[in-house]
Amino acid sequence: MIQTVAVIGSGTMGNGIAHVFAQNGFKVTMIDISAAQLEKAISTITKNFDRQIAKGALTEEQKKSALNNISTSTTIAAGVKDASLVVEAATENVEIKLKIFKQLDEAAPADCILATNTSSISITQIASVTKRPQLVIGMHFMNPVPVMKLVEIINGYATTKEVTETVVELSKKLGKVPCVVNDYPGFIANRILMPMINEAVYSLYEGVAGVHEIDTIMKLGMAHPMGPLQLADLIGLDVCISILNVLHEGLGNPKYAPCPLLVNMVLAGKLGMKSGEGFYSYSTGSKDLIVSDRFK
Ligand SMILES: NC(=O)c1ccc[n+]([C@@H]2O[C@H](COP(=O)([O-])OP(=O)(O)OC[C@H]3O[C@@H](n4cnc5c(N)ncnc54)[C@H](O)[C@@H]3O)[C@@H](O)[C@H]2O)c1
Image (cartoon, rainbow, N blue to C red):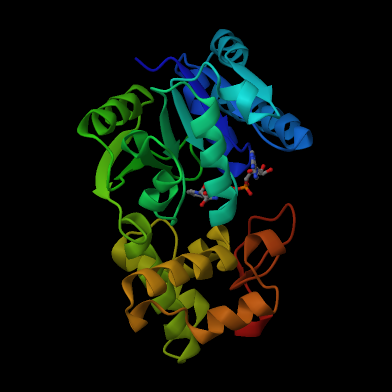
């Protein structure tokens, strides 16, 4: 029975993961190396609860009790000592994750399940630095976590059936829909999404169509809620490249190599929404979708 959860990292994904656990009655400790980030995360979670209240999806009472379920810590050892599950959502960097999992293995109770929210790093590699690879699993939430229904659950090479079943049942308790996959580069979500985004960038690079046309065709023709270029801007073009590189290196097929235009944009610092420009231009406070001057 999972009751006490620790979430490592309180950035975009970590605060969303803590939010859904706390809302569903779990005690959650959010752990980050940055105290300022933890403060910011609590304020983001509070704002997101308020948004749910405004929509009639949550009461003031429920918000109060959910916030009471969350505590914070800046040290892993203190934060995970009573946890029955840890969900790691720290920066997507292999050295950082391997170091965290070594620490978790030493500090968490022996039967604690260690999950990672990684988008692309091998679960089997992460598990290999612990003495409990059978208890290590991928629990890939989607952004924004309180809204998105899917949890992609990734079995590492040694993950046991019992651990998978526990995490599947737990995801259902969070109101999510779990889908179990195996540990190969990009899993399923990114193995299919990233080549689509890369192909959209190739189509632009080769002059097949413009930004607006490519996104409109995929939105209206395929009923996607947003076009692939807009989605790339939202994810971050640097993140897209690093996942494509994982696919390219891990599967050894040139079809996954990032398009030269995508590479140039990242080298030029055009990372999408977070840098203010990608395929579109973003100005603070505006929700208008304006194609970047570079592609007009
Ligand atoms: N952003 C997305 O859309 C998305 C979607 C699915 C999965 N993911 C995955 O989720 C994870 C987190 O991504 P994010 O977008 O929330 O990143 P982020 O940069 O917003 O947050 C990462 C947080 O980890 C903290 N951190 C770094 N090292 C740490 C350590 N040693 N101990 C504790 N905290 C540490 C940082 O201070 C930061 O607050 C990554 O593995 C990413 O691939 C991201």
